[in-house]
Image: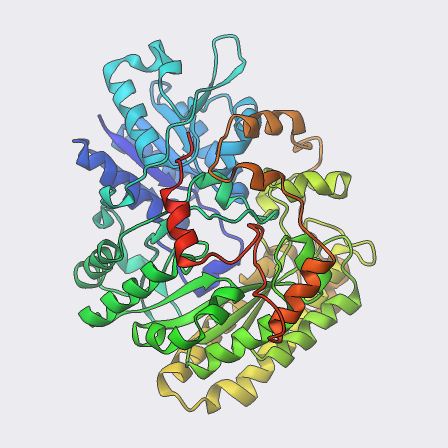
Length: 563
């Protein structure tokens, strides 16, 4: 049984400006397959190598696989669909499989628009895909397709069928990734010039932010044993030459006790590696006294979901951090010698020139080391997408990439929105480049910041930053000529809300009634604001309704798994 994985050749000028990121999904799936005896696994990284369709076609023809599998986030879905069509063109006997978050919730649309896809793997892929491969090998597929849990497919009459979900893997440490399947010399983190990896510390999230769907995709919050994670990192460092890693989790600091144990294990082993994370402002405030420990463990970069300058937007996103909390968290990171990055979401329908300027002023006031202005991207399977209704007018998913303005603000057109965001970037990083980065006293920190500046400059000169070359933006003088290249609505229409709702109804998560819970206003917001200045109880964060204590995190792990 020969299995071929392909990573689609999709680029947008977002996170990739910092380097080529290794597709960790391939390593985790391959390791799980090989543990079950399937050794004939191959991988084509079309994204990193910028392979065109014809080159991928040749590779498929050369390898002659029995199964071709791809994963796709929303903006890469059309590339993935096309590559699976090419696989069928090469040999119609090839079984084509799509995985990833988009297919998990949008499978009714995917299977209708790409009928050459034999199956969609829904949710966590390792066990579902292994079961699927075993079904193909035994002849159970396609004879008894409905017996394979966790997939969707088109029935003989053309109707879309989704089988009951496979339970999440509770012991994540039994998944042993095969990192050797990746070409490590191709995955370089530009700021440091070293190889980069993206291992998992945990999966899922106990919170339910309305703009996010990671909690929905993973269904259950599970965390690995810290020692096992560091074992994996040690393997990456010693056997694959990795010098920097980013934990793939949405928020690895949720379980404070295990995150501390993770850091202590890294310190004990003294591995020559630095790393970064994404986390919440409230976790930084909670762990103020532990930040020096995190720094000794090699943590050098923290990206904070500050999300928006206006408190109104924070409430809309079910993210109850306050403006003052954001400012304090950034100060604490700076004092601990850790690089801070503030993330701003812009581009909703109520965006104005004034609110965009406000984000810039707050970025200057908070003084994070870096700032990122991401265009609001309404994932079609998120709660907020449904709430926005007709305000979402663009359904060309290839542009759902955090750099293309999907929403049109009432007060400006999309080109002006892009121009004002670029003006924020220009002013912010010009100040950093001339007045801050070169004069940073900490040599290691200064080297890192100048490396990040190099990554920004490189992508700017190449016109890949924010996809500026593709849309034709060269500065304020060209904003009237910007063309985002949205596909006609006759090509990509509004997703069927009823079909998405039905897919959601079959998808049980650990979160239960929290999904239905309305965010409290008024008194709760006032209490959160008071807490930020020390006059009240601790404010909650994200959409889950509160900061988790160690006991609550343990309880979340011990709760009934999603079925």
